[in-house]
Length: 194
Image (cartoon, rainbow, N blue to C red; front, side, top):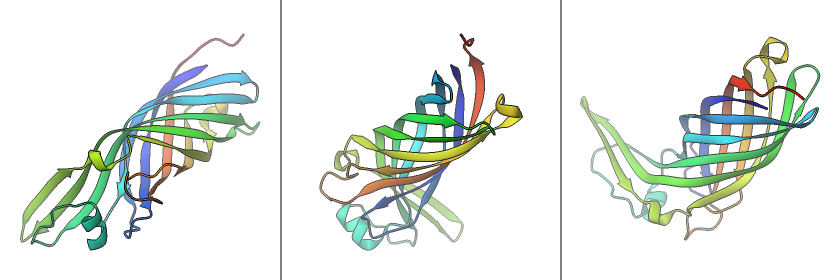
């Protein structure tokens, strides 16, 4: 078993909204890479700081979200912070590449519509919290690949795609989280092999 830190950036959007603009954010957490039977592993852990959402909401999106609209020009985003737990089957190839796939679970911590404006040198950021509109749990599927540096002994870099199965909003069907994660795993320790 190997354990360590996972960090990276993700680009997410909510399918089913009129806005189709991705929101980018950084995430960080910890991971466990548990050997089942070479070359198969169970990859799990928790992203403790992770945001999903969508950027540049349309007037229709803002109306659905019952968000306040301000007179100064600006951008509106739906932002949700999650605790994310993957449970992925990981297959390590002999050339230090790996493939991974499986379910991912999310628990919403906070959610808000964020207004950002910069007019004539006056910057404004306003959050209107709306977690009551959001389904508390998210479940979906992940597929990804990566490479382990230093001949399979160092940090890993990877990419994975997440597609949610559960609607983000309680009152709108077809609103699913989608996110592309670029990640780096830094091993801190490992249990001895049997």
